[in-house]
Length: 178
Image (cartoon, rainbow, N blue to C red; front, side, top):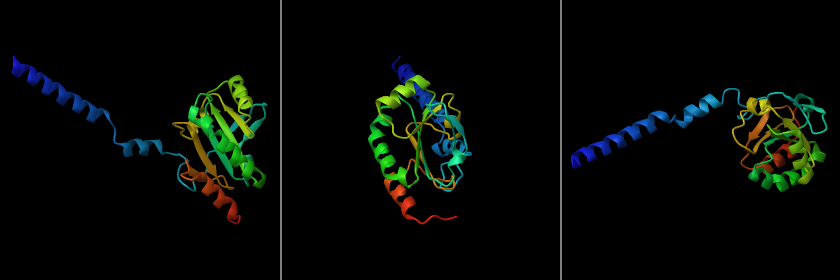
């Protein structure tokens, strides 16, 4: 009886390990599938999109060629997104007069909820509504906040920039190239 229990336990353990190994996908394979048309690599052109802002005006990314753009994908319920707001306000204050367009895109949120959030946190930059999540999907957003810095030509400078402040400083200190 003892041997049967031991054999059952070992068999179950082996089965569990095999299941875990076969069910998990190597991370490089997951990333490979995720990166198709993903504007994550420096120099890749960011997908154009058109979304409404809180005032109902239309925002189209391509209209801002010539200006660097910081896209901030977020939600109202994300605590970390809220904790980043003072830093984002500071970035907007420092660089908007130099031409930086700071755009916060709320994913699958109601206009009422986003308007309340924007008012409560006094967001000083343009707020867009991606109610169906189509733009977030085009950009392959998998978590929030997701910050993407675009150069003056609409190309990705960095995504989840390791040092956003340094990237912005470099962007505005470098002479413009045509």
